[in-house]
Structure formats: C-alpha cells, structure tokens
Image (cartoon, rainbow, N blue to C red; front, side, top):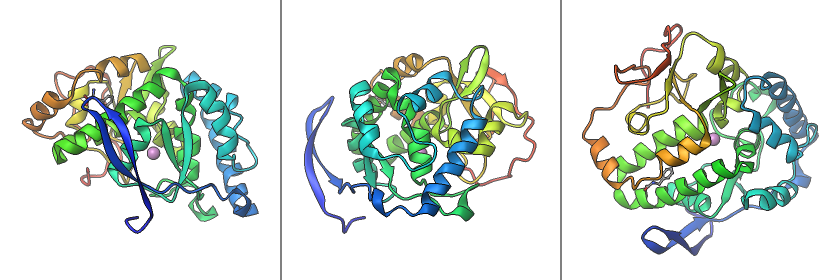
Length: 296
Ligand code: PHE
Ligand code: CO
C-alpha cells in the first residue's frame, strides 16, 4: 500500500483545513471481470435478496432497487455514481483493499466510499475474511442513498481525521463505533429488529442469525457503552446494538468526542458478550454456540 502513488489534498475538519495524503484510486476494470466473477455476484445477489425482505430495514432494499444494482452482472461503479451523486452527493471509488486509517477517513469526509474492485472466488461464496466487492457494494452502498446515513458517515470521516491526531485510544473507540453501527447495526422498525449494517446484510448466515437467533444479546444503542465493547471478527457477533433511526445516530454522535474519548479510556473494556445493569436489553442472549475467547 505504501508503494502506491499518493496525492495530497486539503480536507475540512472542525480544526480548519488540514492537508492529508491519500492512497491512489483505481478505476474499476469492469471489462476484465470473467464470467465466473459475474456469476459469483449473481449467486450472492440472488441469495441475499431472498433472505433480506422482512429482515433488512425498508430503506436498504428500496435504495438498492432505486440504484439499479444489476442482479446478473457486477454493477458498474460509473453507473451507480450517477444516481448516488444526484441523491446524496456520495461517490464510489475503486480500491485494491483495506486502506490506511487516515486515507479511509479522508475519503469518507469527502463523500467517497472506497469499494474493493475484485470479487471473491466461487469457493468463498459463504465466507471470506477480507472485504470484497460483494460486501462493499451490496452492503455498504445502499445506505449511502439515505440522507441521514450519508451525513452520519461524513461526520464519522471527519471525526476519524480528528481521532487520528488524538492517538490510539480514540481510534480504537471510534473503530468500535463503526463496527457496531455501519458494519453490524440493527434498527427497530415496525416493532421488529431489522438489519442496516453492511457486515450483516452481505452475509446470508448472519442475516438470519442477527435478527432471529436466541443466542446473541440485542441492546439499545449507547455511545459510550459501544466505545468500550470489544467485538468478534471471526464469528457472528455476540451482541448487536439497536438504533431507532439514523437520526438518533446523528444526534448521539454530534457532540465533540474529545472529552468522551478521554473519559471512556478510564473505564475497563467490556467483553463482546457482556451485559450491564445499565443496558436497555431487548434480548438477553442465551450465549449458545459462542466461542470462549478471541474478542478483538
Ligand atoms: N462528533 C464526533 C467528534 O467530535 C465526530 C463523529 C460523528 C464521530 C459521527 C463518529 C460519528 O469526534
Ligand atoms: Co465493511
């Protein structure tokens, strides 16, 4: 990653204009996708579109339809970008894979969502550790069509640039917030638990597990609580945090985090499966099937 060309640009933060470097953006090599690549997309898309109605929040599936993600071939970023740009001003940019933190935050702050250009192999249909095009595009991009979520992610990027200057504690607390909202968030809708997190929405198994299984905890969103909570990267989550609306997310994350980071850093971390007396618990998980350790 470090050997890639980098460019400098100025971004706006609440400390004024700050110059940062970003990793080069790759043009989606759409003509180079093989029939197998398109077929992997087709299979994954069909399966998720079957699993998600009644499980994903309404806005998610509606947005995906409005964007016209193509069911039988990998969508072209350039086509999605027209409607995405017109709707919330966001753009998809192609990247090779995970970016250095500051690059990632900078893209978000400028309404650019990095999407991995390559798609998993057929033998990785059910599980892949790394984010690929299917996870990034299918899971992360539809929420960007929602004005409130779109604004939340910009604020997150700006907050990330700031946290980067504050140090490792702040960065880790912010990473936990991303994990439990953008990646694995649930929302109460129609009196039910619905998915909005991309890590869930792009996984057939976790789409069902997250909203239907008795084993995980489902706990009301609480910013500082989330910032202290470790998480799983190699199994389904032990705990999901539940919002009532994207507006709630925006309001709860509007305050300056600088004093909050400091205060949270004084408190002990919490295991991924822990439940506190102070939690608003929608469901206390049975813990069935949980691995013993390995929280990040
Ligand atoms: N308000 C946060 C800060 O001051 C920024 C932020 C917004 C972080 C939204 C995450 C999500 O750092
Ligand atoms: Co992701």
